[in-house]
Image (cartoon, rainbow, N blue to C red; front, top):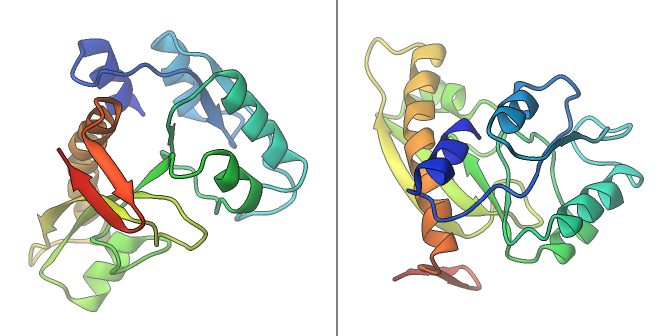
Length: 188
């Protein structure tokens, strides 16, 4: 979120942050958003650990619609979105994942890559669909896996690439340079 906010403030990303919503009450992302002059709000996610419950989901939708968002950008939001949320923002929810999807979906993808023994991993910006890390791929960037990597060192290097790639993709989306037709993604 910080990299995205900095990109917007510097003009590298021709967009503005309409609202930041977190499912964690004391999340640093809320402080960062407020410091960047953005509206920031905590909404309790409800009773489930991996998704929004039936009370929380409509509140998230309502706040995002009130803020008139053109794109929902997930950053560290570790909940699966489905149903009404994805219908409300059809083809307008993006996420970044710390692997070269479709390899290593789900949690701790950098650890999965290291344990599997791949020589290259990376990150993927994708549209969110009904599956887990299965939506159309907008962009990917590679990160080599070094012989002496630990899960922590690999994760740090993947995050460095994420901080560059995610704002670039959001900027391209805002500039109308990305078109999605089914799973086909066209960059102009």
